[in-house]
Amino acid sequence: MEDPNATETLQALASNFNAEAENLSWCQIESDPGVFTQLIRDFGCVGAQMEEIWSLDPDTFKSLEPIHGLIFLVKWLADEQPTGRVVSDLGNIYFAQQVVRNSCATQAIISLLLNLSHPDIELGETLTRFKHVTRELDPLSRGYCLSNEGKIRTAHNSFARPRISLQPRSTFVVDEPQQDESDADVYHFVGYMPIGEKLYELDGLRMGPTELAEIGPGQNWLDIVRPIIEERMQRYSADDLNFNLMALVSDRQSFYESQIEQFQRRSLQMPKSQRESEMNHLLDRLRIEKEKNRQYRIENTRRRHNYLPFIVELLKQMGKNGQLLPILKQAQPYMPISFDGHVPNGAKDIDDSH
Image 1 (cartoon, one colour):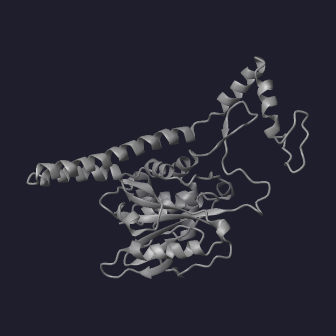
Image 2 (cartoon, one colour):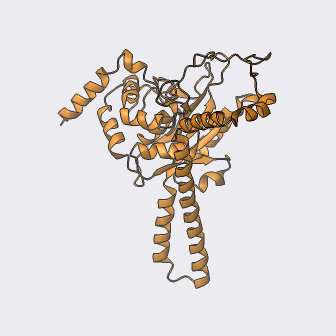
Image 3 (cartoon, one colour):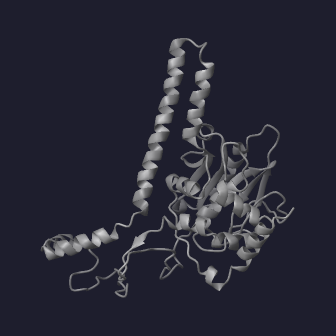
C-alpha cells in the first residue's frame, strides 16, 4: 500500500526544486579517506568506511575485503566516451544524475550506499528515507532532490574552506566562482560496484549507469574492475597522473572486534604459543584501526575549524605591538607584492574589493 506521507514528501521534494535551489552551493571536497568516512557517518550510515588504495596489486584489495565498491578520482575530460553500455532501463539500480557543481564526492558515496545490501552496513534514517521517497523518480529528478536534501548538503559543506571576509562574522568558502576556469583542471569522482551479476560504473555526469562487464559464477568482481581502472589510467598523458582510488569497506574496527570474539571461541584447542601469536596479531590490527580513527577525528576537527578570526586578531595584536613590520620586511623577498602595493612583472593583481 502506498504511504500517503511518503507520497506527499516526494511531491514536495520534486516541486521545491526551482531557480533558487539551482543556485544552492556545494563546496569542493578533499579526496581523503578520513573525510569520506566522516561523511558516511554524518549521513547516519553505520558500519561502513572508506580506505585508500595505494596499489592495484591483488593482495592490496584482498587485505580489505569485503570491498563493497570503489570510488575513483580522475581528471574530467569533456569528450571522454563511456567504456560500456549506458543503461536506460535501471531495474533495481539506484542512479541519480549530478545537477550541481562540486557535489560529485557525495554523489559517488551515496550511489554506492544506496545500491548496497550487506549485513555489516545500516543506511540509517536519512538515506533510507531519501531512497524510499525518490524510488519512483527518474535519475534527473533524483539528482534535483539530492541537491535539496538539507542534512546531506550540510554534512558535505561542513568541510568547506574558511575565507577572510570584511563582514563582522566569519564565513566559509562554498563553491566560490573562479575568475577564469578555461585552463583549470577539473577532477571528478566516479563509483564502481557489482549490482546483481554485472559490474557497473556509476558516474553522475552520465545519463545512466554504465554496464562494464558480466560477473561469472564464483568470479571476484575486483579481478574484473582492476584492469578497467588501470586501462583508464593509461588514457591520460604523463602530465595527468593525478589519481586517487578509495574502497568502500565494512567498518574495520568492528571487523577486528568481531574477529577477536570469534577467535576466542574457536582457539581453545590451539597450542598456547599459536593462540597467543594469532591473538596478538588481531589485537595489533585493532589498535591500528583505533589509532587511525583517532587521527581521523583530529584531522577532521582541524579541517572544519575556522582559524581565520584567530589569525586576523593575532596579526592585529602584532601590529599594535610593533612586531608585524619586521616580519613583513624579512618575508619581502618571497612576497609577490611590495609594501607600496606595486605588483612585480608576472604576478597577478589582487582584487582589493575582497
